[in-house]
Image (cartoon, rainbow, N blue to C red; front, side, top):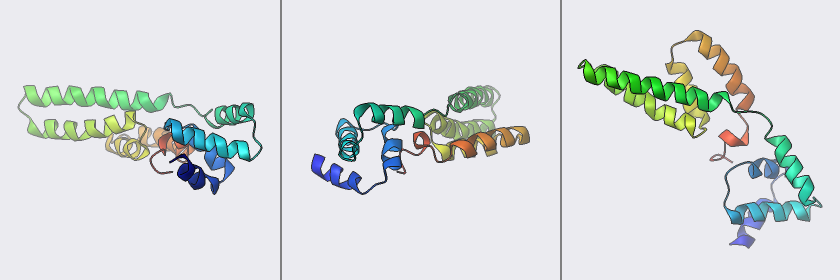
Length: 144
């Protein structure tokens, strides 16, 4: 298994391997990537420094946006339940599913919740925020 992972990572670019290290990986995948980087004459300190430098871009707003959306959707679920408004209930349940995706750092869920907010100011703010993080491995771990 380790040889298969090492062979799979051997043909990837060094920058891509360093970006992968900032994702949640299994122990075998992490050791395979580190092994490939060590074969490319990287020291352990250089690998750690490159990983830290690659993950500098912050994600403070991302979970806050997901938490605000989830909290508001729970409010609308409660409102729809109390006032017999099934439309609010269904829409809030739909929106809360995407908010959970935002909390899991899914960039598509972040984009969808931004559009569904129906707030042009948030479209601008979150659009700039998402554009700068679109290719970051933390929100692309499933796509690498």
